[in-house]
Image 1 (tube, rainbow, N blue to C red):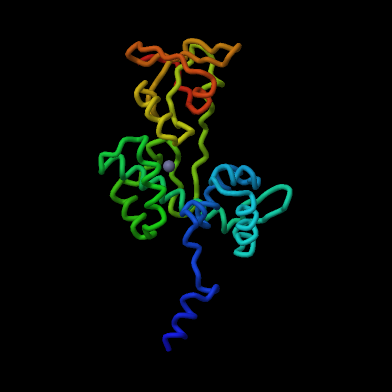
Image 2 (cartoon, rainbow, N blue to C red):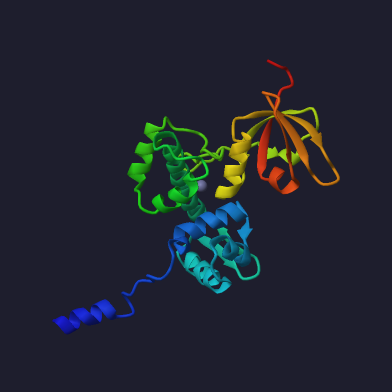
Length: 242
Ligand SMILES: [Zn+2]
């Protein structure tokens, strides 16, 4: 009896990959493929970089996801989500973005801290919890970073934001999204008062080095280098003042 139990516990069939970090779960792969590839394919190396795992692990997982009917995998193109894979990815994205909104609005987290906490929590809450959260939050359309929250039926409103870099001097823009979730970057932008919802006038777009100068409604000007400006997505606001 004891021997039988021991062999059950230690048999390779039931051993769990305990050393694998949560970031290598099926859900994280689906989210990464969606974030990188959208409706197209995500390459092995891009997913490996994103999830901080080896290319061999990614190739392995792509094979498994294909068997599960969640992706179509071609060796030299990478993996593209099937309809089922996309629905599953969007379910997790919805969960993640609702949790981020909850942490910010109800638990006093700052916007640069919500992502990491949501990465942990999204793996343990149920769909029921997620929908109650949506109800509590009044069914928000965007998360604290300005990213659209997929609806419960898996639909996602197309976002007409464009990079700040495509703006012209004299345009008024509203920041709609910050395309980055790294704490240091968000802390820096937050200190400058650059976050979703904020209005700016574009003062100068320097072709030479991509530096963009914007001025907020209180007259504070900020010059943003190309790499930083590239993370900021905006929507144009009609010129009419007031
Ligand atoms: Zn996030």
